[in-house]
Length: 253
Ligand code: HPA
Image (cartoon, rainbow, N blue to C red; front, side):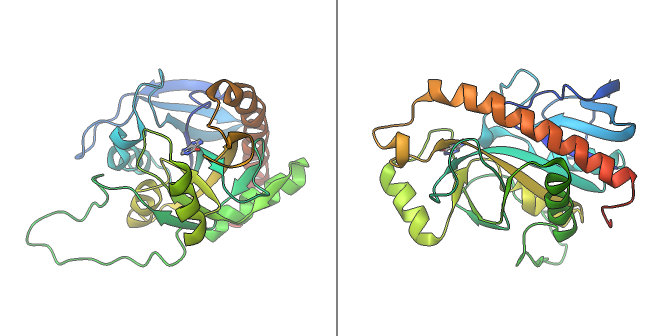
């Protein structure tokens, strides 16, 4: 079953016919909110709002382990995560959707592995390619079928937040090779790998990163809102097309 993790601007899915909600408990505590079970275009999905349904949990306090564990525990085997990002690469202007293919992790102090039990052998998981290629391809195909323009690939630099970056930090990230910056991509992607979930991210660019483009003199928060509304409409269409293709056996999972 498909799991959808919604971020800022996507605390609920208008196109989801909700069947029920369920509070989930995990060995790692409680997820960000109850799991929302429902159907999109007749296909069963589970939705979870990463920051809670009232958008009250900041990126560094999200219980990423509980979120992914709960989804897996309830039958999810593939996950689309939606995340807002700031654009660093000149093509990643506000309003663009992007399917990143790489990650640089600048976060710290987050619970970033399930392998914590004392006495168990240390496990090193391959993470060369952090996203599931089947899910990336399915998202790209869904965008093509629905006529949604999508940027294929890019390096997602994951900042600690909750503050936004300085212009110098964005310059450093660009030198490192980051094309976009967000706050929630890690450890989510890695925990999904540890749980063998097929996981990919839809990045929604909602602002120029600090010091870039219209954010040259600072990020204007009030300019983000209209872009967020517009871009999340596209995300909903994309998800509808993804499940439609999935039902038609086009996704190759
Ligand atoms: N920086 C970090 N996270 C973000 C941004 C940004 O500019 N925009 C949306 N999420």
